[in-house]
Amino acid sequence: MIGAERACLAAGGTVLRLAGLYNINRGAHNFYIKKGEVKQPSNGVINQLHYDDAASACAAALVADRQSIRSQVFLISDGSPMTRYDICRSTLKAFYYQGKSMPTFSESSGENSLSKIGKIYDAKVSSKVLAWQPEYSSFDAFMTSNS
Image (tube, rainbow, N blue to C red; front, side, top):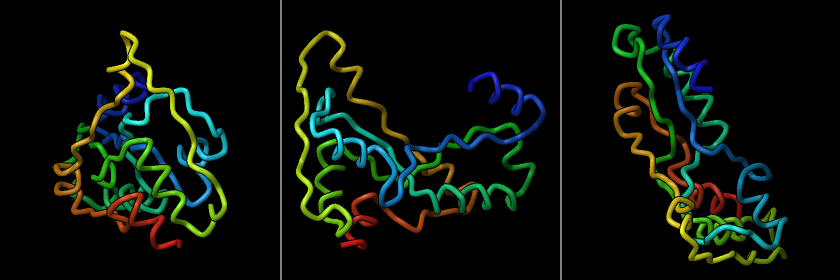
């Protein structure tokens, strides 16, 4: 993936790094709810982006001023990272997941546990340069709209 990004940038292209993609039945939330037991800590942070918002970010890049985005990497997310626990809690608000249960999480305190918490995207610059905003301000907003 990095090799493809480097080739794109070297040719003057633009790279959009998309956060974890989701819709009502695809994404990390669906995996967690179906799995029932998640072997990761509940406080792990996930950056997310609805599939439709990913498409609109790509469209924004296509019409943006070429010189302002040339050979740049943009982080694209909804700007509202959530923990695994909060993702599952929001998921259960949606009608589609009615009757499903909250999964359990492994709360490991091993030496690598901090590395499993995740990174938080700061997509403000990307949104500004591309003149783009996601339709869904957060995963929770999307799931609440489907309740």
